[in-house]
Amino acid sequence: MNIIVCIKQVPDTSEVRIDPETNTIIREGVPSIINPFDENAIEEAVGLVEEHGGKVTVISMGPPQAEAALREALAMGADEAILVSDRCFAASDTLATSYVLSTAIRTIGDYDLIFCGKQAFDGDTAQVPPGIAEQLGIPQVTFAIGLEIDGRKLRVRRMLESEFEVVEVRTPALVSVVKQINEPRRPGIKAKLAAKKKDVTMWDSTCLDVEACLCGLDGSPTRVVRTFAPSREIQGEKFEGEPGECAVAVVERLIGEKII
Image 1 (cartoon, rainbow, N blue to C red):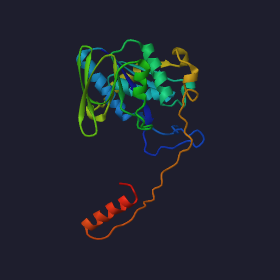
Image 2: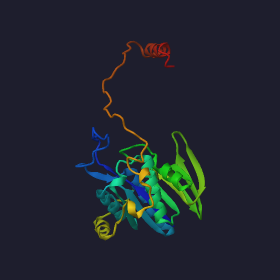
Image 3: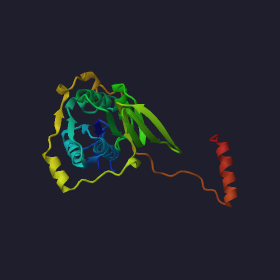
Image 4: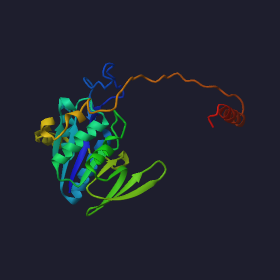
């Protein structure tokens, strides 16, 4: 079983700063980690290969420093790592990112499953995994909390807001996972030292059959016009009296404002 895991390096901070000129996240000088949901994706892939045999390839699109995240994935048990990095990929939105990653996956070739985290902590869109599946023309299952494999048949348990759903597809397929699916392993010193000695393959635009007009800023239809911090001022009205009276007053006010 050959599994590809798409991972992203994200800022390890809640104090995200935005460049006022480009409206993009400032990553310089900010410590970075593997996107936490992607750690669950790596763990699920490694666990399946340990059970069924095969190979885990991790791939990331990002600047050169994203190599550190790939080496962490190698320490977790991945077999191979690929960094897709080129200046012409910079400022890609989710559509352009999906295009570049799907092109890289086609270049890898033979795979049975693609794993992703459900979303990245910095962007929070959850759009890249479905975008990759659409570009590749394969089935996708999101919010996976568990899965079973029987030959080419894949049965996935999805976590919804108030219930669970079981979906059955045939491989190759893409699955994005939630944190409840497993507990990611924490590699020890020996595994980390071994990962430092492994090769990380570097691919730029010349290694991939990509169209420049579909990459980077030129290939990104999304435009950030303005960024701002939401106001923290709390507005509202205080109702005094017995709880029942206050409840009635709140409902009457909501009806009067045509909110309900």
